[in-house]
Image (cartoon, rainbow, N blue to C red; front, side, top):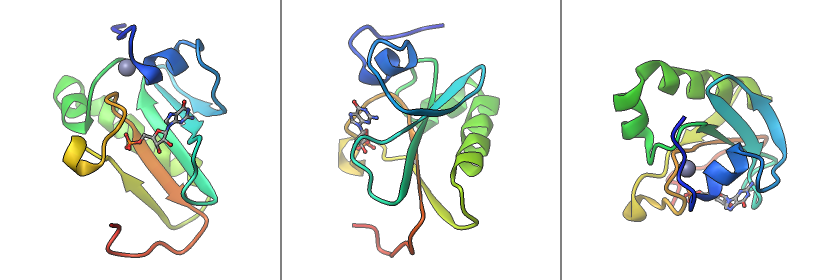
Length: 112
Ligand code: 5GP
Ligand code: ZN
């Protein structure tokens, strides 16, 4: 399993940095965002170091499907928002793919 020694989320996957893990599969980990933007704000990440959603899709389409299925199971409500910030202009700060799961309040649009 490939990991980047300088990557924050690889360190969370490896248990080297603590996080509140809410769900885990063979290939993914879901943990609470440290700066939540909604009552439920979970990040679902591949265990493998892949930088963004497109790279996940290219590497393993089934892995992308697992991320979405995990997101639905941790959302804890019927309505929720899934976000892949991608690239600096897309608001991505951590360059290890992560699917934001936001729920527990009415979402607004546009997201800003
Ligand atoms: P991005 O802007 O890259 O889409 O989102 C990165 C997310 O990671 C942000 O929502 C931020 O709050 C979260 N985050 C950054 N550092 C940590 C950390 O050390 N632990 C946890 N649980 N979340 C983090
Ligand atoms: Zn990583």
